[in-house]
Length: 367
Image (tube, rainbow, N blue to C red; front, side, top):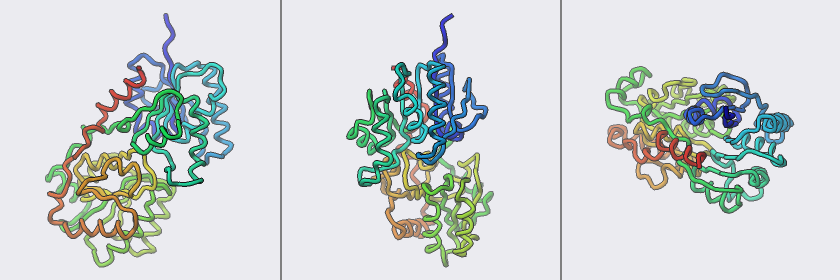
């Protein structure tokens, strides 16, 4: 009986695998692969035959990442994988570093979920660019999610074999159909929103990169005297308590709601009127894609991942400062009566659907 093909599928956290990659693990299993997952802890992961603990640390210079690389190197030599698939910048750097000097190595597919640097960042970009250039030698196929990252990868030749553009990992559009008027009314009731309230929503992990504090400070300026403005900050993370404290210090805790991690985020989108993201760096953000699929207009920081989705749109806005963010929030407040006609009705989201992108990405692996 011939031996099964093997794939090692890596990301820095279990949550990243669970949120974005289960359809791909399933597809590899259906293709006859023995599926191994390498991540930061051992947990049961659907469609994974084996889960391996790789002690990734967010600080790129931590000795823990050396341990993770050595663990991965030993695993790769023993198991003789056919394919390695890496995701998240940290895991991709550590895993590819582990195989730099292996005589016999698997084929490496690296998916970039957003480079943490831009061409205009000057010398500081080399903190992230240098590891990418070092690992390019073992990167057989590089997949990127926005055209600015594509240009970066092409300019600096951050791959050994092929460079491919993909429309993200794909959003399951069956779970995010456009919000109906009836759903909107019912959801607002469940969140105790009045008919005259304008609700803004930002769903993201509380972290420095997601930049919730910037949004809270901007919101505090425009909501003073506008009691009908409400802000929902959904999610969990290391900066959650600091953000709660900030709302108390600014005297706006009665207008900012922290509902925590929400399994059915569509119901919160149904209750709200506008999606906001003040993130500092993105590849192709799921929260924006999901909100657009539901029909919400979007205000987002002017960064490459956001530009990919909403640049050129008349009713979605990119902002570069607190003043611009305040101006756009007030725009939707003053157009409250016309919000239903303003909503985008799931524009240009079809290309980012899971079904279409799963086929495209699996074709890249199979070829």
